[in-house]
Length: 393
Image (tube, rainbow, N blue to C red):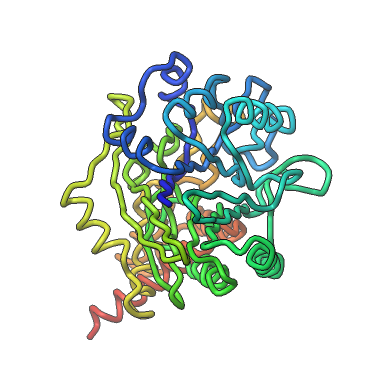
């Protein structure tokens, strides 16, 4: 069985009008990749609806796709969507129920949503694969009554994988998880440890989403972890000046009878000017993957790469800022002001801790209250300490 797995898909931004008009957003190579697969799978990260957006206490963008999106995807051979993500509830219950209706009318299967089965079985040519998906806690979650994404803790994940193996006897179990922090190309330690536990629980392939940037691949106890597939079709203004949000890869997953898995990476670029997603399997991207994403040869190599990437994201990667127009619309990037952060660490490096102004200290204190920012802050500090120690030797 051959499954093509892609990252975050949202027909919003520059792609909304094109999908609505039925115009092409995938180049010929990507269309051929989808066509030749036995199963094409995407992370659908927006509701397909015209229902009004819900109010978010923490701010954040509200996404939605045009009403013909499910049919548009089906015509391009997409057959399965995971709905376990933090944007599928952007229009509340009305939006998610309309999304399910559009998908089912178009013949696209879905999973990851409470109120529906906890896993999905896919078969082809005698090979059976179990698909499971869950999301971190953000926005409405499945409460046993109202349809919303599943959240599973490790105890539940272990029990669910065991149940699937005992009742379905699949050749492979693929687990899609949406959560963690954003914009880093090296997975943060807590998320990496969590993915290790999912693999040890019996998932043959673990695939991560939500970082909006590509992350690397690691093997743990003979099982494969793909930490992040990044954006596949995604355009929001807050991403425009953030590194790696327009370049990533999708996976060709070959599953043999008996469960042996082989992966092929297909690199692509989101060309916002041409409004097209273009296959880009060139040497430059191969080198980027090898040097910057594959950092798991040793624990020391991984730690150094994580601290360095935390510093890059926190200090220089220009976290999305809150513009006046987006704030007026109730939409924010949710990650604060990058200019202040960069200034803080430049002064700490150049002049010492005593030069940091009170305003910058308040910025750091504010960041430490946000769980998603704390890993970057402390990783950046560790990078500075190591860099200083290296210069002093």
